[in-house]
Structure formats: C-alpha cells, structure tokens
Image (cartoon, rainbow, N blue to C red; front, side, top):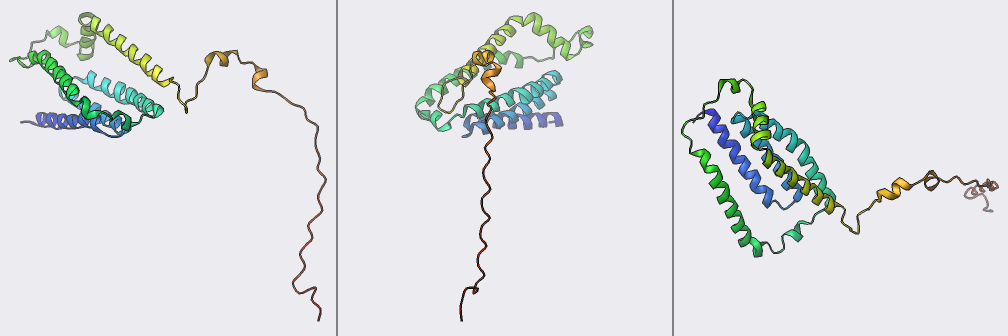
Length: 217
C-alpha cells in the first residue's frame, strides 16, 4: 500500500467516526461540529481522488457557509435534546429497517462503478479543459434535470426552516414587517416641553461633635 492509499483509509476512518458521532452526540451543537469534521475529511478524500473542484466547493460552501447557518439555526431554535430521545428504542427497529433499505439501494447504484477493470480513456481534447469545465458541462447538460430537482428540494428546506423559526413561542419575539414600514417619525420620537424644576439647596449637615467635648469634670 502506498502513501496515497494509507491516507485514503485514514481520512475515511475519521470520516466514518465523525458521521457516527453526528447522529449519536447528545448535544446538537456537538453534532454540528462533528459534521464540520466529516465535511473536512470528505474534502481531503476528494483531493486524494483528484477532484479538486469538489473538494474546494465542499470546504467553501458547506464548511464555510452552510455549517455556520446550521449552528445559527440550532442556537436560535434552542432545541431540547431530551425531547427527541423519547421513544428512541420504540422507533429503532423501523429506523434500522429504513436505513438498511437506503444502504441497499445506494449499494445497487454504486456497485456498477466498482466493477470497472480499466480506467476509461479520456479524449485528449477534453483533458485540456480541466476538471472544473468538464464537471460544468456534465452537470448542465446530462444531469440538468436532477440539478433542478435538487434545487427544488433545497427551496423546500429553506421554507421549512423559516416556518420553524417563526413559530409562536413564549420566549420568541415576532416582528411585523408591515407595521415597521408604516411607522412614521411621530410614532418613533416625541419631543415633550417641560418646565424646569429647581430644588432649593439643602442645609449642610452638622458635623458631629468631637468625642469628649461635652463632658464636664
């Protein structure tokens, strides 16, 4: 095994550990931080597979932007972890069955790529374009429909996040944008003229008598 293979297995092991901790961590913030670690190791794996654009996009988009948004939403919603653990063992068999079905479906789709004996030969004219340009051509021509489906799913996720944020709670503050727009200067600031009140100076306090001054022999 060469150095590249050893690094691949090392970062893959860390990626699996971080992914496992994402779903088993008691704190929601800790789970989000483990997700950052998983994304970082996945980016390194992409670099080892010579997919530089995907690695940089994973670091800049997910680690640099999406995870910051995740942490902000988690802290703003103030989710209680104990409430989500109620009935965990009750729903574990069904969740395990669904997870096994998803893993089987992904294996059936991905096993075709592992049966390749020889690497496909790339046209020399296409090799000069670079990975980024070739990826753009594939995404916006051959995979345009799946890209649009993913965009719709992300839009639905954004709407769901906004709906969760604007739910009525005792400690939440709701702002009406319509009232803010209709606000006038007179509603925000009112100048009141008041007559001055001058207090009379009080008499200076009497200094205390020295001890023994009033004693008589």
